[in-house]
Image 1 (tube, rainbow, N blue to C red):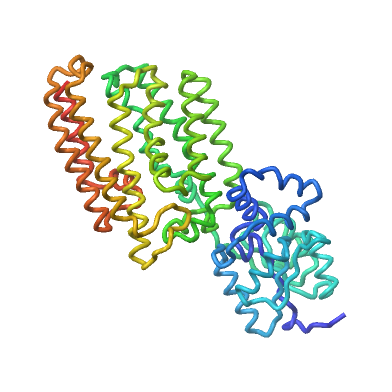
Image 2 (image 1 turned 135 degrees about the vertical axis):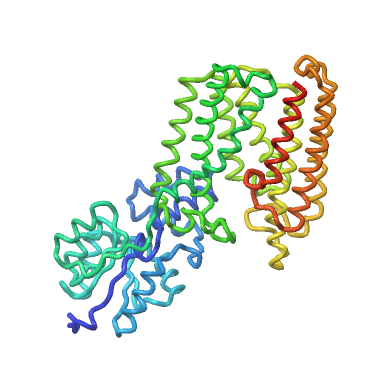
Length: 479
């Protein structure tokens, strides 16, 4: 067995959770579900043969872009520092060899790769035994993060504890050879707020539109039901956002801003997301079933199915994606009516479809404009549009917005309108306000000043808020 002087002892680095702020088994699992949803249960067949077969199956069935994975810059700096001392750097991981070798080739930092293959699952005691076989007891230093690394640290000269899982640091310290504890990936409540998209709950205020339209917003019982619907819809929506982020890791990492989302950046673990999204979903549906009419739960199911369809497939198809987005907004209005037992009118549904189709196309225009500004000409990743489609999208989007104004104008002469408003003619004042707002939104979008989510923009934009207040005031005066 080769003898090493202390300075020449190899420095062994774990991959998942240490060098990488993620887990390759879960990364490949989510990529498999994203791209092969009809083969969803195939990994169960691999798992029945053992975890090694599962890792190998997923590694060969998916194509992970290793250049975009969330590596920990502090660990890379540590590796470079140890390498400068003349030490051999070893990547030892329970992930499959195919993926580990691609990462090693990309980073160009490792002298050797030890990983899971068809014969062994290189984790815990098996990793320890292989390292001892190669370098001897206490013949290497080891950097890891999990409970599986405890036996490896016991056989190492020095232990480097990186972003430890709960309870790991305490167990490692008991062994008495911890050289350094590195905490380079703090995640907190702000990351969860961002992942849950709590600011997007503003969209759920559409639930109160039927109450306002029916002049029942002051009805305590109906208002309470509306508030419950708002809460349960928000929980369901946040559950969908989490699942969507988990499925879209690859696409998000190619996007200029979405790559900073907590899961794509590795600040939140995929495992925590896989736990959180079903918990939120159960809370939403249980609450809806127990406290609100069954019709609301039915609408919530329809929303969830449509959102999943959008995330998995529909958003990749031209025109269908924008229509689906408009429907997702409109479903919120339908949910409000179902929660409060109110009837929906043709006017509300027609108005909402046109206005939200316009906003959906604003979102697409903003994305494509960004791509065109970078000189891109190919179809945008994960979408069905080319940067050259900008002019047509703006034409369709503005037209759809103006059609919503026409629906509003025709609503003034509806039979139901005269029964709800003492001065329905006053509603005419809302038309120029809406015309101004739609025109301004599209002009700002054309100039590149639009947030990629127009709803978020509207909530933060002072002019939009003033127009919204005036718009509501018009209907109040008409009443």
